[in-house]
Length: 511
Ligand SMILES: Cc1cc2nc3c(=O)[nH]c(=O)nc-3n(C[C@H](O)[C@H](O)[C@H](O)COP(=O)(O)OP(=O)(O)OC[C@H]3O[C@@H](n4cnc5c(N)ncnc54)[C@H](O)[C@@H]3O)c2cc1C
Image (cartoon, rainbow, N blue to C red):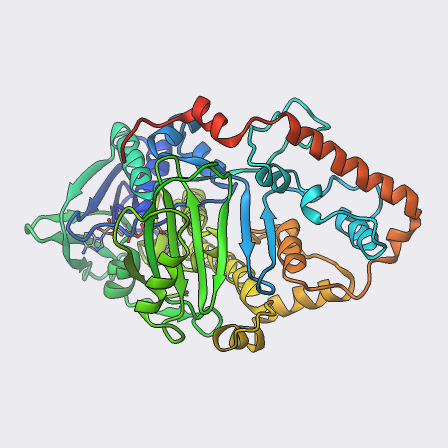
């Protein structure tokens, strides 16, 4: 093990977007004095402020950072999210739902529920898959309630959900919490990054960042949370970036808020357009919208006009243009710098994965925390796992683009004909052969998610597993009916989403 000369005590987080403040909130919940945590951010540069939709694993982060759910939802104008409705993705005019959580129920029989469903569907004896997914059925009925863990045999026991929230308010909420726990915030623009040039184990490490005011903020460990700027990991340490544009060609987005509409939907909508797609994220006080597109296939003016034309209520501001790059840093952790957030990589927002990748970056850092110095083996493992996570998310997103049968040429044709990453090809081939689904331990999305997207975008298996036929047709049909009836009954007793939010976490008026 290669130790630095002194134990590590001072942690400097550079950047105060979601990545910076999520890191501060989680680290300050875990590290007590003598550890010191300092965060430097520049109001003049500002934050990206568009991470508004999440996935269920954010509850892990809430636990880690000790966030109270109702309080945080109230502070961030949050609503619940049960999944994503995809419109026009397979073919124009089609829609499907990627609901969180389980499909069907724990199999009583030898193979996965989806196998029985595939067989029954072929025999005309199954309902659409949403009828067997608790989150999807509740979402489509506009209903929500918190899981009832004590109802062990009910699909309500493990209803999976996430949140939509205002990204700016989220960073503000985490900031207040972190400051209460002793994180020291410094306002200022970093103009230089100073490296240690003394011979020894920390030579080449970042020693301090220098602010415009001349102040130097020194530290033992630095978190680069400077977003696309990658001020430390890239500009100072020169760690390169792997570009994934050839698989994910969207590189820009227009974002615009619009007035709230009724009812308050408990899901995100992603509607495909000619050269990308549009998000719709309902919050308590407004709806967040954005059009993600490929600048090679559509001009900025046209993209803005497509966005505005497809709003379902008047805009509340002028659209804002965001440029981004899809790909990942070769190494997220180099020397004494750990890149978290957009500085580490970015896979476009179709499945709302960026905040999750941030939380996993932080959790991994806490696990491998270099209390007494930097161990190259730990760093290599951190980077390996980080790479696998990013690649697995990337493949899942590529799947949505690749598996399209749209007829509007150009962008979608190119996506349908591209050579996809090998691991994705393997997953698709296996599913196409027999409906089999694969899980790898760094996968963020589990088998049900892959199934819902492959099924929703019309990838049809050639057969189902023969073991499925150990059960008779009538017996299997009754089994499926039992599941869909139970789900329908559960939906029947759930309150409306809007009503639930009003009682549980209504925010005050204003924006
Ligand atoms: C179009 C789009 C939609 C998205 N939607 C979602 C979504 O729905 N769900 C999701 O999970 N994620 C989403 N994301 C990703 C999400 O927005 C980001 O992961 C999240 O905002 C974290 O960003 P960040 O903190 O890394 O960077 P930023 O928000 O850019 O923060 C960077 C920080 O670094 C500071 N900084 C930079 N340079 C300096 C300097 N020289 N000196 C001092 N400070 C500096 C800035 O002031 C700022 O505080 C989306 C991203 C895009 C592009």
